[in-house]
Image 1 (tube, rainbow, N blue to C red):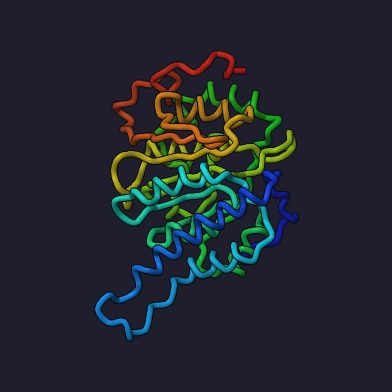
Image 2: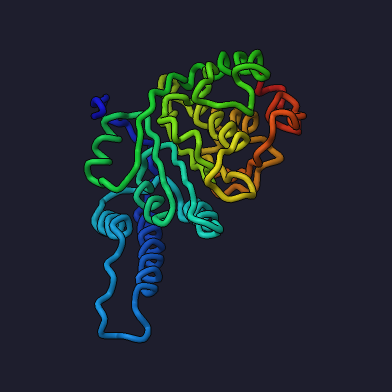
Length: 292
């Protein structure tokens, strides 16, 4: 049983009920379309199959919750379009518990969805309310204010502990997320969404570790997922930590698109012997201003 932590401080949400109503409308449209697939075309008297728990759970939440989304409708559609295009059930890893968490879980209900959050209390409460959700808490030690020193450490260790192809479980790199269950590192993640940790002030955990770890997971991709690389989405790309770390660990040449504050990267798996990267991760050289 996980121990309780301090009460979660959520991201500052965008205001405006119109955005939230649009998200709800999109979700209701998806749910209605999904429901139609359960209706038997030849036997109209047969009982309809009930909605899967993740979908009914999310539907009830968004129909009754007085909450504002962290993502815009365009950002949500960007992630959903990739989930919808998976050739097999998607493996989805999400950093951060946000207002969209139940939406991600329901949109990927046929696949595996795992959430990682900085607050043990949030994870415990979320799992208690939604027992079919898989979530883990992680202690992020990288603070926003430490960006400069962490990048200096990365420069020294890019060919050592902070290399792009490695088993994160055994990594001593300061940027590595290495305290998740062993099985998480063996999954071939098709989609990784980074909307956490919070990172909204100098003393809060920054997203350096989650972005670095996503880059390593994509390049060291395990089994169980489809081919074609790992889609990595990073929210709030205009902030310094997110801008610097996506440039270094996900790389400009892998940027597919940006929608509002969401960056979409497609990162391919590489073998350690075939690695010919500048600074270890990227074919194009990151801006020198990103090395403090």
